[in-house]
Image 1 (spheres, rainbow, N blue to C red):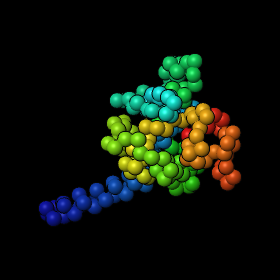
Image 2 (image 1 turned 90 degrees about the vertical axis):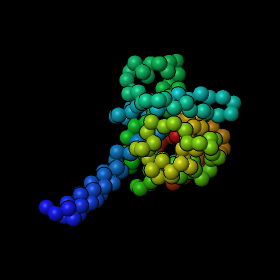
Image 3 (image 1 turned 30 degrees about the vertical axis):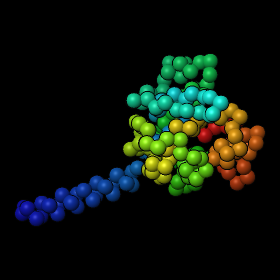
Image 4 (image 1 turned 60 degrees about the vertical axis):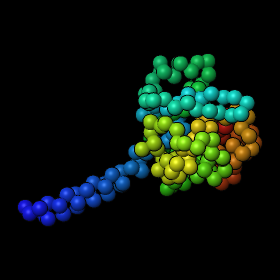
Amino acid sequence: MAVWDLECWIVEGRRKMLKAAAAGTRDTLLCPSSQPEVKGARVLGVVQQSENGAAVSYLEQLIPVTTEVMRWAAPFSPTEVFRLAAPCQTNRCPHFDGRNCGLATRIVKILPAVVEQLPHCPIRGECRWFRQEGGAACRRCPQISTVNYGASETMRNVIQLAPGGEPRDGVPGETLAPAQV
C-alpha cells in the first residue's frame, strides 16, 4: 500500500469512527442533575444551601451511587445533599424536547453566571448541558440544586414549575414538590 493510500485509509477510518461516535453520543450523554434511581447514577458534587441559594462543590472523581453512599445524606434525601450525574433519560425526562434539554437552555437563558472560570468538572466531556450549551452552562451549573425548597420565581421559571410545584401548562412530567431540577 502506497503512503498516499495509507493516509487516505487512515483519514477515512477516522471519519467513520467520528460518525459512529457522534451517532452514539445521544444516549450516552450524562445529565448533571439526575436522580439516584437512574441506572448508572454517580455523585457529581455536594450541595450546600445558604440564604443566597445553592452552591455545588464538585468532586474530583465521581462516586457510584450505592445504598451506603445514599445513607451518607441522612437524615436528608440524597438529592438535597448530592448533585448526581447519570445517563440522560431523553424522552423519559420532562425537560427533554426530543432533541435538546430544555432545562439547560433555560439555565443559560435565565440565570446569571456565578463563576467566570469554568469549574472543575469530572463529566464535562460527556455532559449533555455542556455539549448543548457550552461553557455558558458550566458558568451557571454550580448554582443548580436538584431539590429547590422555596424556589424563587426565577428558579421556577428555569425549571418550568408554577407556584406550589405544579408543572406549567404544556410542560410534560409529573408534579414535582419540592421543586426538582
